[in-house]
Amino acid sequence: MRILVKTTIKDVAKLAGVSFKTVSRVINNEASVKPQTVEKVNQAIAQLNYQPNTAARNLASANTYAIGYVYDNPNAYYVINMQNGILAECRNRGYELIIHPCHATSPTLTEEIIKMCKRSQLAGLVLSPPMSEMAGVMDSLDELAIPYVRIVSGSATKRNHRPCVFVHDRDAARNIVEHLIAQGHTRIGFISGDQGHRSTEERKLGYREALTNHGIPLDRELEIDGTYSFESGVKGFKQLRALGDQPTAIFACNDEIASGSLFAARLNGLDVPSQLAIAGFENSPFSLQTWPKLTTAAQPTGEIASQAAATLIEEIQSKRTGRLPSEVAQHTHFHPELVVRESTYIPD
Image (tube, rainbow, N blue to C red):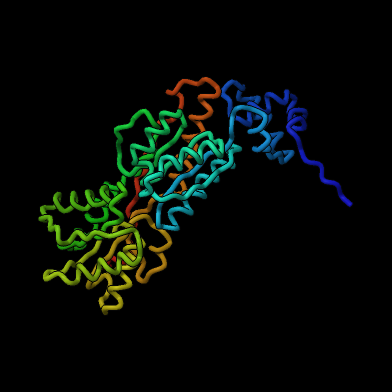
C-alpha cells in the first residue's frame, strides 16, 4: 500500500533554499521579495506541486484569503462566465471564492451583504450590476473599510476612489446600430433589458446616438421596455409587429432577448435577415444556437471577471504590504467588439 505524503511549505523552502517565511511572502504576493527569489520559490512550488492550504492560512493570521462575488442577474450564461473568471484568478492567487446570489430589490440587501462579509470573513468583494451601481451598498462597504471592485457599464463613475472595471456598452451598441444602418435600415426597433441595470440605459443611449448621428429621427414607439429574457424578446417582437409602421430591424439588449425575437419572427413566417434583421449583445451561446446565427457585440465576460478579481486582490495585498495606492491598478476598460453574422447581413 502506497502512503501519500503531502508536500508542506517547509519542503518548498528547503528546495528553494529560503526560509518558509519567504515562501509565505511569495505565496501572498508581497512586494518585498526580490524577483529572483520569487522565481526560485515558484519553480520549487511547481516542481513539488505544492497547494497552499487556504483555510490554514486564514486561521494562522489576521489576514483572510477569501473574496466574495455578489450578483443578481437572470442570465445564467453571464453568471457562469463571471464565476469562472473570478475563480480562475482566485486559484492563481491562492484565494477562495464565496458566491452569493441575492435579490437587488430586497429592502435588506445591504444588511445581507454586510452580514455575509463578516460571517465568511471576506477580504473583499467583486460587485457586478446592479449591486455595483447601488450607492447604499457602496456606502456601507466604505464605512466598514471592506475592499471592493465594481464592474460597471459605461466609461466613468462618480466614485473614482474605488477601482472599477468599465465595459463600454454604449460604444458597442452604437456600432451595432450603425451596422444595421449601413445595411439600409432606417426604422430600427429596440428591446431593452431590465430597467434596474445601467447596461440597459447605456445600450439604449448607444442606439439613440447612432440614429441621431445618421439623421434618423428618434421614434419612442420603437423603444420597447423589456427584461433580459427570451420571453421578453418574443413579447417585444409582437409589440413591434403591431405597429402601423413596422421596423425592418431589431436591436435587442442582449442575445437572449434577440433569440426570443428571432424565434417569434420565424414562427410568423418572416425570413431573417431579408425581411427582418435582428442583432443582440454579449456574444453568449444564445447567439450561436439560433438559425441564422446572431450579429452581436463580443463581451469577454470571463476576462472582465478575472480582471476585477485581480484588481481586488492587488488592492488587498497593497494594504497588507504597505504599497502606495498609485501602485495598484485602479480602472480597467473593456470594449465589446462588433461580430457580424447571418441575422443581419445579406452578402452581395
